[in-house]
Image (cartoon, rainbow, N blue to C red; front, side):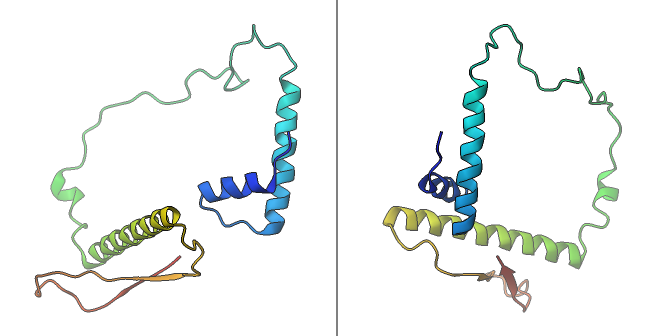
Length: 144
């Protein structure tokens, strides 16, 4: 089965991957070879063969679940409310918001037929609070 460049472009678009022309050619060739091999394997009768996940005969490689007491809440949270931890959590939250904005923008551009590759490599996220006593001066920068 022949995989075309358009097939590779479609899969790359769905996976949100940026693929160079050389990579498109290589992926089309490799995927074509894989699918040709799968077609070759279809000629064998596998009706009486059970599906196999491993040939080593492993049954259950996981340990038994053992219920153990957990840390007391006070001890677990003892180092949590430190400035570094809270700043890191804020940064993670801002990154998540920035990624959601990116997904929303891509969805909108897909619907409206707008240019997808806008060349944007940096984003700035700003957190705004109505409580002026909790606002810390500073900024966050996210590179994609």
